Image (tube, rainbow, N blue to C red; front, side, top):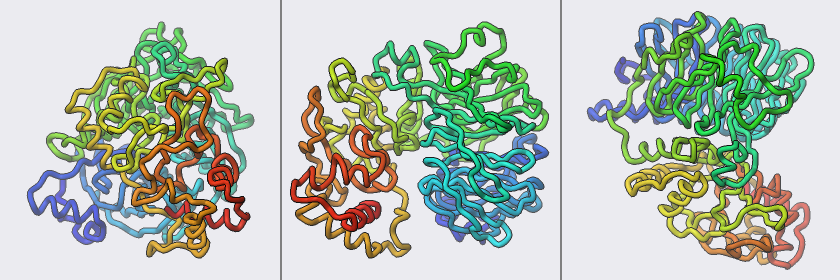
Length: 606
């Protein structure tokens, strides 16, 4: 692989590039690449990977199994896409909030321009003529259009909650966005840049989106939250959660059809990638939590169910020899792409720092293309592996990452039994709790919504043995997981000015936040915006085993919807006007609408 010094000019303009250069100069091991996304050129001769932890993009010759060039591009690359002629590409930066155009010549990458697009962009596609990029900007709930020649944003359109993956129909007439926390697909007309339809999917944690070569169906993989308590029986029946493949017809009625993917006793975990052969005969799905790719043959006759699916994979599929093949890959396979020849499948593998080549016809892993990285994983990386390992749960149904997606939250609520009770409608108990973000978790104890857990180490053991109903981790595994949790940080706050200052409204809101009437800082104060104590808030349930609630940190509150311990408030306004209003908490009076607006502006700035 070429040395980082070979691109000193463009690399030197980024922090990631500086790190690569410094490590190379010191003779130190290079960082993990952690490819989270990939793009295959139209002719299948070149492949790009977005390497999240090294802040770089790799250009790969997949047939030769060789990395041709690597270029540092920005903070946490998350999506990458070729133009049709493979002379340029676009890469988005999850924590960098920007898009970079890559110019490609003689198998070399060069930065052709950079433009800010909004908070936490991920998925990206390029128009057939190579002049326009479309970006899924997750926190803004928007798809953004970028002119790749002028390198400027030319349009924004509101879609569903947290768009993450995008796909264009082959003729470029429809752009589809998979809204990760919205359970919907948004259909956009690129000509008018307007949403023309929304399709329900019942899909939680929606990940890669793909469209077949005929432009007939859009496919997306996702989780389905079924809502039962995490008892072993409920887990294994698929009543807690399960993995799904859903397709939506793009012509006429856009009713969704779903297929459960989990066999009882040996489920899939954290489906992430999906790809379809050009002839439509084969569908491939990656399951990062169970470290595998699943090949589904005779794809046009798969037994989808309109408007939903069963909880377990249909037995008829399992009884047909070769219809469902599970190919172990190790690591954490994420995005997928089929080569033009059909059987050859490429998988980005985040935890193995590689691209893997699979023969879908024989169901075998034929090649692993190393992208670079340390010879052995460090303590935090081993913790990251545990965090993403669904095999640590009962019959491998889910991982820590399933609910705390990318170390954050998927916004869903669960009955994990760790609050000492079970959600039983006959007893009028509400023990379901929202999965909290894990950003900054190492410094915001005590833990759990009731604050009864005073050791983060013990909390990890509780999660493995009760929430996941798996075996207890070893002491070394606990250390590794806690080390990984300590790396989870907040991205920059998009509600602040570039210099970090507050808006005028937020400055007024800060006074209200600290006023006797609101007194938010009483519980949400200090450096971590939580006081580490348990308080009676008026939200208690009659059957709570633990009394009172642990105030969560308000850092990053702008992206923690829904709000309160059980997610009962969809927005900050709902929470601050309703069950957690200053009037309810302090009893010292109701805020005016202007005061409420200002308080919300300040809370969003934290």
